Amino acid sequence: MLTQTIPVLDLNDFQGGDAQRRKFAAQVGQALEHLGFFAVVNHGVDAGLIRQAYQVAMEFFELPDATKQRYELPGLNGQRGFTAFGREHAKDSPYPDLKEFWHVGRELPANHPQRSRYPANVAVAELPEFHPSLAALYDQLERCAATLLEACTVYLGEPDPPLSEWIREGDTILRVIHYPPIPPEAAPASLRSAPHEDINLITLLCEATDDGLELLQRDGSWLPIRALPGQIIVDSGDMLQHLTNGLLKSTTHRVVNPPNDRDRRFSMPFFVHPRRELDLSPLPGCVARSGQPPLSPITAGEYLLQRLREIGLA
Image (tube, rainbow, N blue to C red; front, side):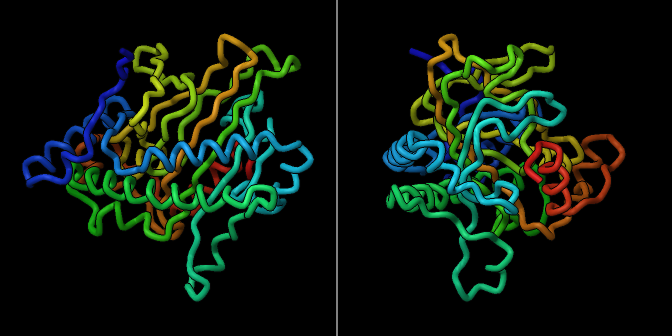
């Protein structure tokens, strides 16, 4: 039986009494402080919905390239719809990542005052069930993310309102990734996903269809993370690291190429973002606990745009 290589936490523990909630929050905080990653079970995301989302994703990425490219929308910095193979690269990497992907974002009611700030999601004419399946998964993942951020707030003792409120109507994105067979013309040093850190607060990663994810440990070695049924992998991103003045770590990770170049892989990271106007200036208690000078003030929107430029999406 395969075992996970990172801490595995049970979200049901956060639904108990005060002592149990604080114990779970401490486990979350310590995992993010020391490793930047953990896995969660009993997360409330329906396994059948995850399978359905992967099925429609496989059907989409099997469409002809010319068909997929009709859903690549110029001017949106890849925030909705399709992004073609080789377009994105990790910060400072000379090679494009060996992947193509699709983005689903926030949807607000037609009469909502903030509706215009979010581009419309894209329906795929060839697959009527594609967007509804991904939108349903988005909603369930967001509920899980809010609970985990509430636990982070308990661990930190700040902010007020809690981090779970920061993501309400935020820029959160569900990315559906296809890593196709490695093309023969790919540079020998290129990877499915070069070493990088996530931009956002936290990322929830539904169980991928295969292994390949690795995190960089403090001793410089790479630790493989298993793709195990029933687990969602959680990692802290750069925004959370900035907000906590480096207390909670944004850990470098990558997706390595498979032993067999013809193997495909699918994954679905859920990038949890705050509202753009929110200030990411380090929290006072975190500055004190980190023992480091406070990082510079910046809004979530400014931070996001800066990082999108660094990875070739803006």
